Length: 99
Image (cartoon, rainbow, N blue to C red; front, side, top):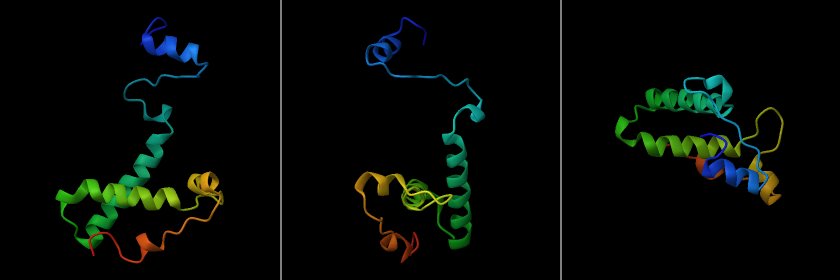
């Protein structure tokens, strides 16, 4: 932290823009909204499918993979923009997690 830290010097050297968020200020970080959406989806699927808590980390990764490959608000997905092809998520939606 600070203007003379190694991180700040590296940012200036490589001409990178950086910003800081205050602790306990989720409105300053845009990722917090997506994390909230993912958490709600994971909790809903866990209660609906009666998935044990011990596999929570696998469940979050699985849900994040589906969410990152789905279109939101009519825009194409980042993976679609990167590879130039439509992403196939049928392998993840054919069977639900923990089937």
